[in-house]
Image 1 (cartoon, rainbow, N blue to C red):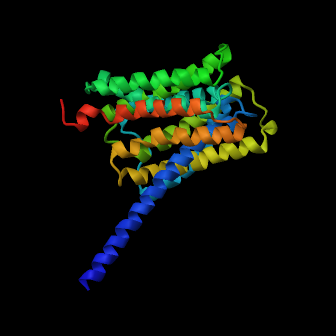
Image 2 (cartoon, one colour):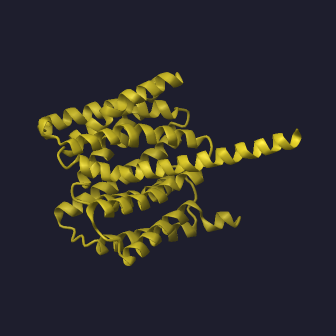
Image 3 (cartoon, rainbow, N blue to C red):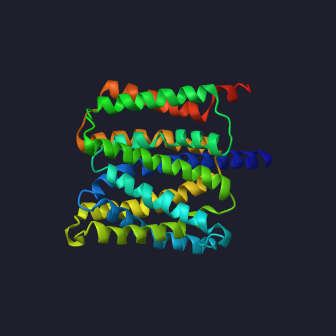
Length: 310
C-alpha cells in the first residue's frame, strides 16, 4: 500500500511539474506573439485607438475574473495617486508608445528592445529601493546594451527620424514599465494583482480610445479583419490569458525563475517575426541575440550573489 501511495505521489509531482513547464511556455509564447499582434493591429488602426481597443476588449474578462475571485477592483482611497500613476504610467502611455514604435520597427526587434526592461528595473531599484548593484550585473548591462546596439545596426536601421523615434518610443515604454514595477514594489505590495490590473485597464482603454477618436479621427469601418483579429488576440489571449497563467505561476515558481520569461519570450518573437516578414535570421544576428540575452540574464543572477560574496 505504501509503495502504491509513493508511486502515486511521484506521478502527481511529475504531472504538476509538466503542467508548470507547459504553462511557462504558454506565457513565453503568448507574450512572444504579442509583438506581431501589435504590428498587425496598427496596419489599419492608429496607435492610440489600437491600444484603447485592445484594453476595452480585455476589460470585461478582467471584471469577470475579479468577480470569480471575489476581489475588489478598487484601490485603497489613500492610494489614489498611485492608482493614477499605474493607469497612466503602466498602461496608457507605455502601450501607446509600443503601438507607435511598431509602425516603424520590426516586431522581433521591438521585443528585443523591450527585453531591456529588467535592466531598468535593476537601475531603478538601486535608486529608489537602495538595492545593491553587483559588478557582474553592471557588466551584464554593458554586454546587453552593446549587443542591442549591434543588433540595431545589423538589422539595417539607418535611424532616420521615424525609425529613431520608433526605437526611442519602445525603450521609453520599457523604462516606464520598469519604473512602475519598482514603484509598485515600494507602494503597492499589499494590492492584489487582480486589483492592480482590472480598473486601470478599463480606464486606460476608455481614455486611449477617446483620445484616439479626438486626435487620430479613425474610420472604424476601414479596420481590416486582420487588425480586428490581432486586437482580439491581444485583448483576450495576450492580456487576459497571459495574465491569468502568469498569476497562476506566481504561486508555483520563484520570482527569479519566472522573471526569465522576459529573457525567453524575445526569442519566440524574433523567430515569429522573421517567419511572418520573410526575413532570414543570420548567424551574426543569432550571436548578438545570444550575447544580449546572456547579458540581461546576468543582471538577474549576479555571480557574486550566487557564490555567496558580498
